[in-house]
Length: 104
Image (cartoon, rainbow, N blue to C red; front, side):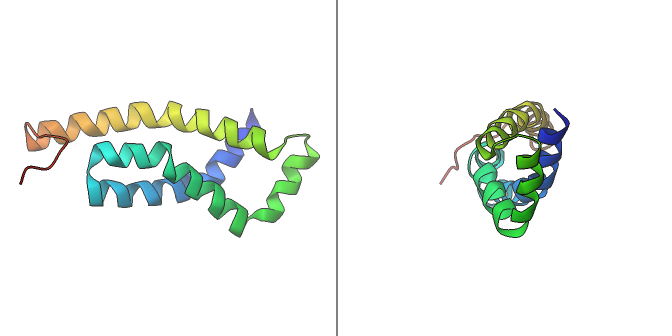
């Protein structure tokens, strides 16, 4: 479990950065969607681009890239669901009743 957690920690900053842009631009609901989907894909791409040589250490442990991606997806869900639920509740308490869609 430790190598999977280390891999997730390596891609986490990329995921959070991309997701915060989604929260700022589109709101909490879409930010959560970006966190689970596009942020994770962006994190994989950024890891591959910036830290590709670190994949060899995972290969030496007998862990395939696909296993790393799958574990990161599940860890991301376990972290993302409670974090964005709390964020959604805090924003609704601070801002009051608000809709997930914009009103024009």
